Length: 347
Image (cartoon, rainbow, N blue to C red):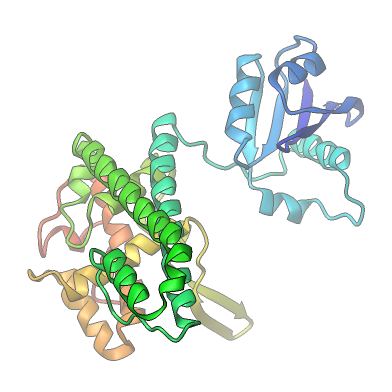
């Protein structure tokens, strides 16, 4: 059996082939191209390959599997904990990855299905557009503020016209500078709405997403992001594990008789965690109909504040969504929100 360590980069990739005895058979740094990988592997098959998770990891996995090899994508953070060295080069990294492939000292990560990756791409594209819109919005306000103009509160619909009117009245010379920024902001907002509409439309064809939206506060974006992030619910043993995976559980420091619980870990997917917290706020502040989850969250908000309550409700919401996905059930007020390990009586 031969083992291949792959230190993947966008331009050049280091490859190290190692035998079962830990001896290096051959190693090289090659351009990150399918043909170059084929030349290094010499049309041989059956290697056990290891590559760290990265944007290109799924592509190289498909390439090597097409060549007849077995590949495992591993957690790069845990790989660094195993590989402790003061000398670092790409070839040394590839050699260490080959050793990890030979010994099995690594933590494999889940490889998402093509459908989940495509849905995830739509969600990340929309999030990127919203980031551009927010940054441009702040820049417009900052440029006006530097000339003594404060816009104040203004709706998204009225924002372009209001900026143009105020600028023409107060700082006319600034209009040619702001016009491209206004156009960029408007286009980013419009395209983000278009992607949101497309995501919602695709969600209507998904029975799972439709069921998840039966939970108060959960809309098409949360349902789609939840499905795209978890991909396969069977890889989680429990709802509590899902909450930990999304970084919605408290940090714990325990030593001897001392045990301290801090803020949430914020590990895992930030986009889904943010959307779940936003959904929790909607549930607590805007949803008219009551349910056990909302009443529990409002009681907690009175004791610890709305911010902490929103995070706690987001954690319960994630656990509830996982239960509904696995069980095939639909949310029913004061019934489904007590299932799946979602104990509403405790924080």
